[in-house]
Image 1 (cartoon, one colour):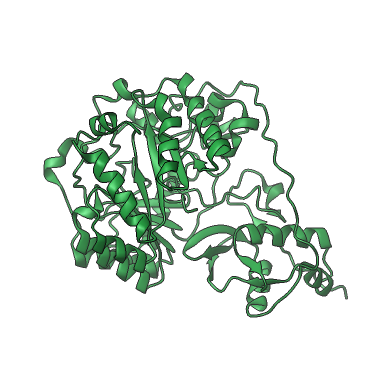
Image 2 (tube, rainbow over the protein chains, first blue to last red; image 1 turned 120 degrees about the vertical axis):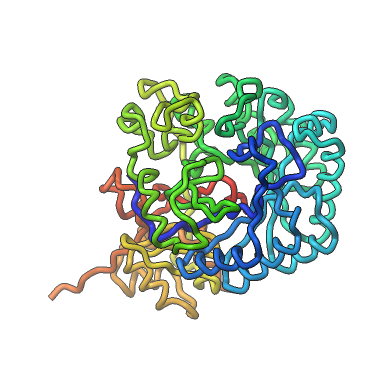
Length: 431
Length: 41
């Protein structure tokens, strides 16, 4: 179903399993044994980052646990990752950030995704099981924003806060944060309380309806950071915008490395495939093939024409309910009528638009093409001829019309191709 | 002898639809979709 990249294009590194919060919804599978917290040491972190570099992994996200429990380790990890050219970002609850840490994040060009559970202080603190966490979060957001660190907020949506998505987004907007995500809660493997917090299926579309309203009223950049079965949503004309790039990335484009060095397909998973402190990611990555070849999908999903778009939902949700290759708990089955997504017509670049290749473009050779990496972020795969052309064009100014004429290609095709590259920031307008 | 044309285009990461293997647009391509870190604005 999915072709095999030589290695992941984005890796999440769990610096520590420790956390200063005890969120009721935490998906970390080790949460049951939190007395046995594990934290990578500096040497292990260096080995892992060297491994990523030599395996041509372009992007590193540091997560946990809460990475700011070990600020020196976290900053030295970013420092080293940056020095070898990796794109970097951070997941943090921001309750432990100091002015010094914020300045270091700015210096190292690290953006932060943080978590807000409600605009209501009491409910937020209740969900994190940490009194004062809301006030510390807001102080943290203000601090990092003051230092110029890009911040985006994610709200994990569960039964207790599903009716507060709109007000929470509005509150986030009032803080000056421009990106707001609302994401349905997932179970932690072995969790005994998930049934109390899980969202009923009829509430899933409320996430999207509220996000659309927030975007329309406040101009917020909205998204939902997980996959949803299309057979649940059905109306792709309204909800397809949230699914177009949110099919499950586990083992396909990304993976997670735990605080024990073990490689897992995603942060939710407890399946392990090798240790990144001891083995190259180039050796470990092929072992995750079952996440790419469809063998973890139920037959009904394999037969569904929308399976590529929704990935058959979340495999770890299925595992939680007893069968990793079962139907997603929110799936309703392949026999449904889907209202198709209406794609906005693409405004093509003019034939005369003067373009240059982004100076920060990286090319990674794959078995089936060349991966485009812009500023440490994977964009797409192009044909070998396309990669050869981009290499030729580096340092020059060109137009789609010139390319079409020089290589005897259909102009509209070339305009469309460079419009795609422009949208992905692979090429930019010449000054 | 006819000169061989450049094969420009995006390559799909999926094996499901071989007909859509090469495309001039990125709409059929599985873009970066990491569920927790692809949030950059």
